[in-house]
Image (cartoon, rainbow, N blue to C red; front, top):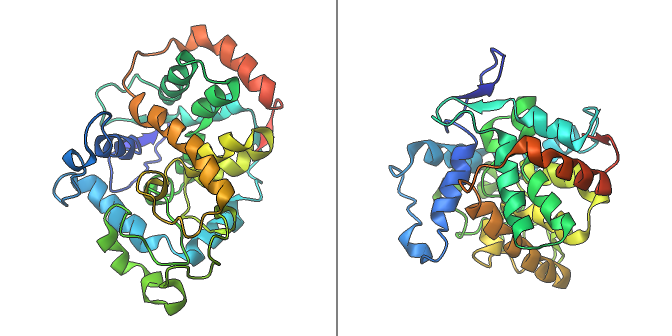
Length: 289
């Protein structure tokens, strides 16, 4: 069970930890393997993840997302630095994992160091380091299904390219005629910036950091869990030309997000001066959360 270190607060949920979803996604898209070999969505393949998606698909409605946007997007939870946010996320510990000494910061660095080794721009490296910081929503008391999971548009028909699409039958929006059509409440090719996405850590970290980072980084943060689009090509009827261009960056980032976990364990103490300098290049000392 995932919990907050030095606290009696327990983060309940259908999965044993938020990282279980990351592992599941990586399994779905094994590098250099055909997708059909790994996309095992049988309900008994991973009962915890299956139950997670059952709840996620039932509760992520157009109105629910609007409520969470109103709650969190004014960014009124206080100010802290990027590194402080990473250390705060570090209090999320997974007791179900025998390697509990591997911290959340180390997981973030595994992604960013893989990007750095391949010689990408410094803003790209930084994006790898911060991309999961929105998971602090767990520490704010949000259930797992409102923090992680594949993201998708709400307010229009749910694509059958979303994992476990059958679970949307329990979503109230599936019974509302205005949300059941291909475009729903949106105009064709309106652009994803005009589309309300399911709520989670992607949207939150995008909103917290967007004014400090270049546009490709913003897209990486906001849509890295939008697998129906960047893996399967769904929802192109809502995307505009700029979305199509920027999703090339999302796909480039996604390879590092999926396959860096489990690589060589980073030395956080030795690397911290580099990341302090990198963060200071793009962010002020403290930002609104």
